[in-house]
Image (tube, rainbow, N blue to C red; front, side, top):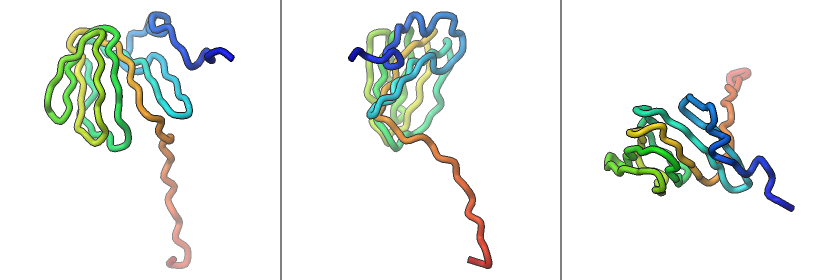
Length: 122
């Protein structure tokens, strides 16, 4: 059995004609989520904390400033970084387009919150 087509990507084909910020391709296996993302020069991922998963980034093209706990690291094409869960993080493209792979342990999808109706004062 070969590798299914939806679990592989030709990054050049996936990015051809893509001019927006965000994911150009993604795949999910039983254990991993992988995304190919593109950001224009100056675009950013706002500061946030991910309490659930570590995230591994591989820079394919361009450069960015990665901020982890307000400490800055410059990442360029060919570099990679592992961001541990529970740490404040942000990313800003400094030489775009920035193209990178993001990989993390698979998470369950977000479930909508359904209000519970109270009957008879219960």
